[in-house]
Length: 313
Image (tube, rainbow, N blue to C red; front, side, top):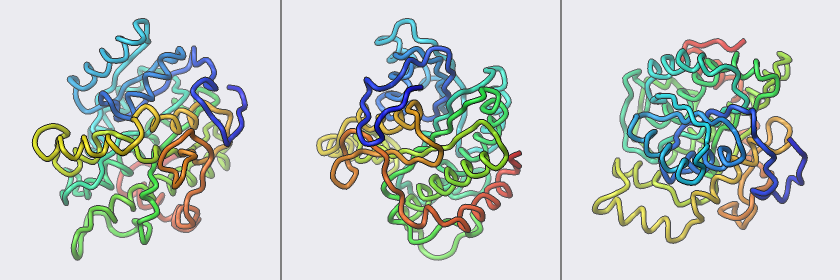
């Protein structure tokens, strides 16, 4: 990888990715993960598409091969909201060999209150606990690459969280505020990233952790969160409205691509460089003070190990 200025990164700055294996979660067609996978495949990476259904994986595979006919693509079935599914995916991924980059991209946004089969609130389960477990299961393969990068996709919405999500994740009290919980899950992404990077350095593991956010990108995430679908009736109206005022999903993927391929130190956070970090070319940005709370980082890590049953080396 070659060094680039941290305040002006473009797709043309991405070095050749031949010989690298990149696993990306949440690769539904048209979303951030799809565009992240597409550009990495275009640069020669072997890309592992990770998603919940064979149908969606087929769609994304076809979409990428339509633009990159010789793309080297693998697939991995995983539902991050189901810890048993994550464990099965971790076992299946052993056949992939060393992994150079893991992109924790999959997520849900603003969903109605529901509990997973593990008894966890769905947004926290999908956006944090599932990725925490998957990263831990893949850590030996990441370390085997000798220079691995873990990129976790957060959001500017981490700023709306009034506190870190450190309570019992299997209990609930009071009214459910979906956007506050979403913000907490995105804050958790940053707390996890900074703690993972610190622990990897202390353990002398050849793994660095970075985070990225897409700004205001035109994906199906909001409509899916509100209505469980992106097409039909009010879902189509919301989806079209968001796309009309946001940057493209392809542009939203650029900060993730910067974090995954640029010569940046661990614990770096990448996001759009425009006003309010809503759009524009990516650069290094700052998370809020809550994300840098070392005590919250440690406590969330310990809670996550307890919930998922994994102990990182």
